[in-house]
Structure formats: C-alpha cells, structure tokens
Image (cartoon, rainbow, N blue to C red; front, side, top):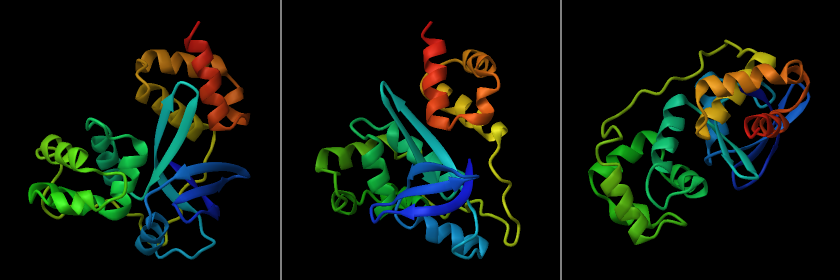
Amino acid sequence: MVTGRIAHEEPDGTLVVDVNGVGYELLAPLGTIGRLRGAGNKGPSEPLTFYVHTHVREDTLQLFGFSSAFERSVFRELLGVSTVGPRTALSILSHIPARELGRVIARKELGRLTSIPNVGKKTAERLLLELRDKLPSTGTTEPCPTPGKAAAPASSGNNRTMLISALTNSGYKLADAEQAVELLGERIDVLPLPELIREALKLLAR
C-alpha cells in the first residue's frame, strides 16, 4: 500500500502521491480519489491510502493504485484474461465499478463491455468466458478506511513490502525476492521504489 497526499491529478486518472516528500506516480481508475475520500470522510488535504499493484515488464515499471483490496483483486483477475493488458483493465474499472463487474459478466452484458474504450467484441467475449466463475455476481462489501483513523505514513518497511510484492508479481520466488531485498541493505531507507526495483532486478539477474 501507499499512503500520502495527492500532489497532482490528471484527467485520465494518473496521480502523483506525495509520500514523505517522495512522489509516486500511480495509474488509478477514474473516481478512485472520490471513493477514498467519501469512505473515510477525508478532506482534500488529508492523506489517502491506495492498494497498489506493481507491473514490471522488461524496462517498464508502472504502479496502479486502487481504493480497496477487492478492487485490486478484480484488476488482477482482468489481467489474467487473454488480450487484456493493464491499460485495458484500468479502462474497464474506470467505466464499470469493481463491485458491479461481476453482475455484468453474470448477465452476459456484451454491449455494456463493448461500449468501453479499448474493449472490442472479441475482448468482451473473452471477458464473459474467462471471468464467469471468477467474480462475485452479487453485492460485495469492500473494506473501507475507518472514518477518523489516519493511515500510517510510508516507511522503509512499506518499501520492503512493496518491493517484495513487485518482484513476486514479476514471477520471482518469494525467497529470491527476500534475498534481493536483504542485499539492498540500507538503500531500502533512501531510494525511491522504482529505483529499488531496478537495483533488485540487477541483483536477481546475476
């Protein structure tokens, strides 16, 4: 997870989150900030907590931020569908809330899916086929921040957790990921996450 204040927001959902003076760029579904602020009764200057998925492919590192663990899990299910990449999955969740997507799939609402940018008929058919038994088709209660309770600020421990998550998401074994983190030593405390991931990948490539 990443906790910080919103330093910048683009119309397409791209965010820059200020975490103790370090800016993290997150790609998020449209409406994410509104859901987080509404759930926790938070003002525009208060820190928000995002559930993060780290996408690492060759020289590409992207962080995707979500308002709940459930929304992030739906995003990951979408990534498992043939022909659906991170941008398409993000577009789907920007147009259909995660809690509603299961009902759309269960009802086989092909037209609803094809109305989403970057989702053609073949991709929509794949979604209906491959997700029919993977998403809840009834109302789902998502975990929300407790009103009035501030999330803990990011720390080197958060960097460690996010780095291990990024490496295991990229296919590395947990033991190898933890070893790479240990080899980074004190750099965990001072380097931003993108640079830590690059350094860890170099260590794992040896």
